[in-house]
Length: 430
Image (tube, rainbow, N blue to C red):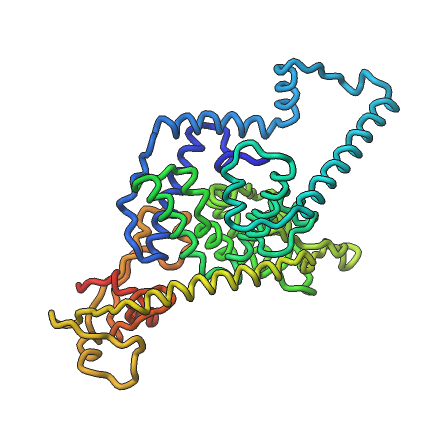
């Protein structure tokens, strides 16, 4: 139950948004992952993409007129539509309530059945996923196994219902916006690498864009959305930080629509905009009341942390990502790297910068360097939200050192405003 792409109802709007998103995703991933993605073939099956745009625009129109679309579809399938106005109020009311009650009862039984299913091993799950015809018990077992691996906590009926309501993408966004942000680049790079391998260096734009979280997370971070998540702090629409937040969101409303599929307008209050964006991570501001003098009362809100076990899930995800990172670092530590500095004689560069400067350090210091971040293709509106954009020239301030997190050699470079650690692969003398 969602729209296609950014929700545009025109073919041109849908395709254009996908093109812009692809350009930004590749540029941001190149800068964050310190790798060159210019070889990617973005023109994979243009005729299929055109068909996707046509069908997607139709779906988006139907989603805007959902009730009418569903009724029209039922009529086409041969059903007879009975208008409730043609029946007595008592009769129609009883039918509606009985249908609601049956629906709630059946769904509760479904969630309970999934939660009570037997646990499956990895091999059993893979076998079941490959099986086409499945019994109800097997479907329940597969769903439980997938939820258990997705959230890494015990599967309960409540968790099944939350997942059906789209909780996972909201929770994932919140995790990478906070605890898991340091692992986001690696996550997006792996997904991109997998798609490139399957597509032989070609990508299907809608799938590629859907798999990348870096732009959306950077956007929410640039909007400083987390400033509202302080408990016991009362917020009013007239607060200075709320007014500034609205101005920033309205200024970049087109970017927000393209990457978060959230519509922002000048007519919305600062609180309403905050609520829309907080919904992307399944959080909200609670209404406290109308406070103030009689002639100047104003709605007041505050954040109340939810009791939904997301902290437990985040802890599990963090342990998983740290273990995966440690494993990759362990592999890299077994690789001996040597880097030429001032001549063609290879030397072994130490993994940390020592306080005692050697001749090698003195050879690096003062070398004028240029750093390119590869974000030239991003639109100006998006670029304004990202501080590290474009091209900069600086002076090396020491010898290269090994950064275990990035698995890269880096060097401190003075860009005038201060020293910044830069990956050596992006440097060249000027």
